[in-house]
Length: 270
Image (cartoon, rainbow, N blue to C red):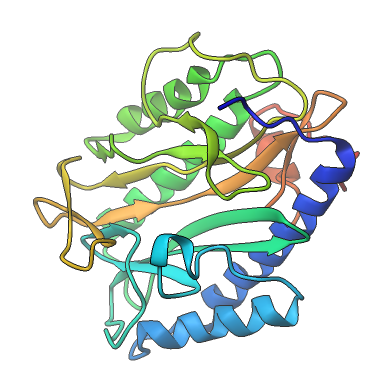
């Protein structure tokens, strides 16, 4: 399948979806507390997406039963909300998406609820920073594999972490998952050239142990084989017609973080 190139008007709709996702993630981040059930967090997300005039792109996706994915500790991605209680010190990863006028937004974050283990917090910080390094590397004129190379190089420079191999980022637009698949590792200089109109979801997933995973009997939840804790961060960004990036699922478009990495964002989507 060819990579879908978006016009400025189409990217503006994606920005609306991305902003709603960003605000929904912020609301969940503020709301999550020790003692909550994971399905209570799902209900908060569902209500906010509905208030925003959007629909969830997760619910019903290949039969997925909920609005968000919520994964705890050794669960890395695709955990299903339910009656599990969030406990003090849990690493909680939340992935959320929304559709507005047929265009998708998709983002994720991990957070430690209650008292944080310093090693867990470092893992989260490394994972989040690697996502931003990947976005910064995915500039107009770069090759697709430059993103994964930047992510892997940063993670490996920070310690021994398992980088998931079977899962990665993806194109996004009129579908949540489109071509191309974006690896979180690999050599630089390979793959298609990134050009204006590209929209990509960048999402590193790491563990404090092995990169090997397995899927639970629910056929969704991905856990580490060695039960080590994991982290997951994601933002969707686009290359605007002026050749500059813009993070569709960041409140400020990624301005502050990308500026610290020497990258200027586009003013066309602000």
